[in-house]
Image (cartoon, rainbow, N blue to C red; front, side, top):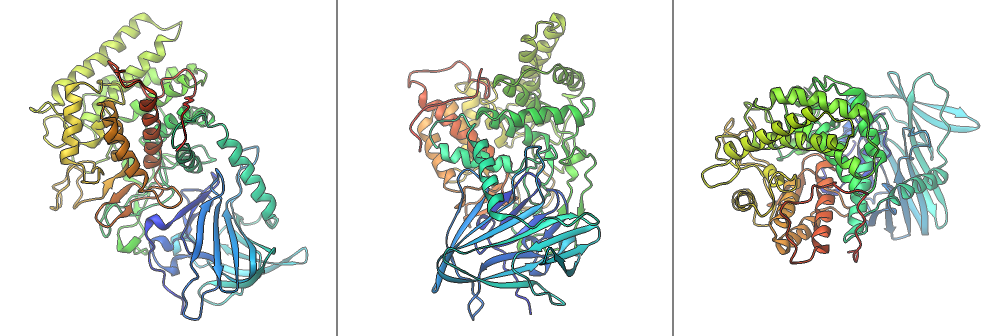
Length: 636
């Protein structure tokens, strides 16, 4: 009988990827999540959201007579790459395993291939490859057969129009359950295993040349990372985080918010969403972060994708990574969910929402990219001007906001602030253009100022604290962004009161922050969902940044150090964190969390290089630099 897989903690996973897709790998050398051939394709390994029966691939030292795996002695990424390395030790020998997806070639095409390279270090180490391919999120069973090719026996699995080629030690094929290969590596010996996907009917793919592909992959990633201009404290932390962000940039243009679906925000709860899509908000924020570190190519791709696929008259909230619209949300009833957390969703119903903050994040990213050296594009200016006409008509409407509530629309204060950001950044861009229409500019300034006055009049409660929505009493951690966005300076009494209120009412004793209050009673929450969730990781980084803005640098630095300690052993963060159980929650790794981490490191560095007596009337707009930021200091 096949073994069942217990659900490993979310933070026990590592990520590999190459821009075509990505996979999660557990500490015991198991790939339990892989969508192919794209990030948003059906998963072929889905044990993460189910059991062994839903698909996995494990390459590790053979289990002992009791079935227990041999523990790995070390796990890390190789250099500034997503190549995962594990070292294993057994009583008879030790070995190193490197697992990766080959990097894209010079044309940007990345192969659909996973490669394991097993290298003997000492003695002899017995390994086992257990391979259980289950396309269709674990609902399909492929047909296996052997093929002789150039005198070499190869194993191919077919499912519909998809072919999967398994190369390396020859695997035995049974009627049910995983196929398996047992092999031994001696010191100095190398064994390569690979899995390749291609549509049926094409010529056979060549077997992987593991060492050559590994060398090329490391070269490509190190070359990309070498262009990072950040030289401040915690540089290694920043580099690992931007590599993770780059790993989630698709060769098809879009950037996924996370490579997973339905990892729960509360174990056993219903807050399980599909993040394998391109959110304009998350992608814009990531671009703003990347250009601050000197990466302009990603901004160029973002702008081109925006102009190609996003209609400024009716912009969507999220898209398929290739620009597809209309991502229908449905439930996979056959999957039990991570630790029984159901439903398991595919697609995301937020695609049809009104989220007035999104154009502000887009405009902020475009300005940051231009500030960092990306040449202006008249088509982008026209896109923004068309969007300005739309927003001028709609900004007074209620919306679902940044948190994509599934309850009633409201006049969310954060949304209004981001509409102000849109007009502020557009005015800044147009003021640089020689052909800008003076009357149009003056009108845009007037709209910007009207929105600012509206927020300051209607977004405050009697305490002088910004609330989640007009007329409400609850707080919203997204309002911690007000000083970073330049809406008000950090020394404004309303900003200070809001930051202090969030600390009192939304923060945990450890400094983690909930997005907004939640109740036990179903339907009582502003988001229309029942129950609670974990602390939202980006909000804690926003609190650290806000503490810097109100000049509590010591508290900000202490909080940032605590937050960095929440990363797993390979530097990754999920969307949320449960301070009670000490576990990461939500989709993993999460773009929002990783970019917030980088932004906080950069903010702390800016604070460190300022003189203690320096005070600004208003904060410098993030990304508003004439060249990519080069900050010199002793690295952490």
